[in-house]
Length: 182
Image (cartoon, rainbow, N blue to C red):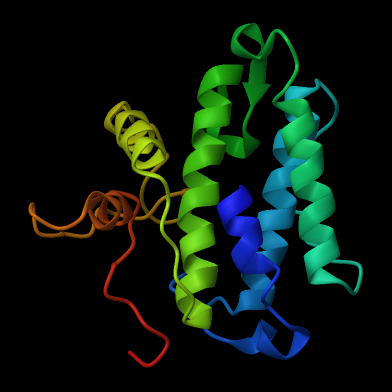
């Protein structure tokens, strides 16, 4: 989340109309989604009613992201996170550990979405990318986590010798070669 936040802090209000790799979404839509995810994961992890589509940015997209990121960070620090059951939107109930892993994938992918939309560098730590690969490899068939309307798109073919993060982006339904001009 720190890496995503570094990129997000560079997005000015005038940038919110830029296209993103998320089909049909501008940066404003993506910010609404990110903030909503953070709020939803935070509430669900703490056993509170979660609203997964509260995309209100309150007029300040960066502050809304920072506040929601602080809430999810605090929620994921609860001592019994691994043992908790967390309902993740309409996708089902997972262990807290799995929910945190799903959130990690969202943060990595959407951080990249913001960065590439802005033309900014985005280089996640190799260990983090390796961890994300392990999480994705555990997606069960038919889980509803991949495809239309799911958190992650269909797999995009990426060369086997591509950098590890590019291969991860492909597994998360992203084309690592995407650019706003394409």
